[in-house]
Length: 187
Image (tube, rainbow, N blue to C red):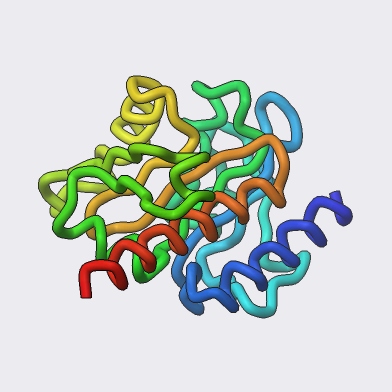
């Protein structure tokens, strides 16, 4: 488990340095067994993560859920419904989030973005008033319906899953870079 935590800490620092995580904003997890996953705690500071910043959860709620990330229910739902998910993260990359406010799709014009995500749908949650009560079901449903490993939620951020942790980080970086290029090309 310590090796997995080291991987999560390393990727968390990288995502923080690229402004994808805020100091207390975001979530990252790893499936440990079929019914267990490791996730950051609510008060985790993403640029200095350690063993103490993670908790091991089962899909059935117990006392540990109180200290776990607010996104734990969403991560649990993805792990239970998408067998390919080994790592999950929620980030709020600024260019992607800003681009999502006025666009229903992200259609990259750059080579790498177009190659991996030629037409990425932006999910509209419609209301943020009850978002956390709906998010765990709606995120999984949208990923499943669109057969995608990435979901950009309008004005909220990006959820993604991957089999390898480095691939997870690459997805966020690639989409963020594509959105920066799209915004720059409009200037």
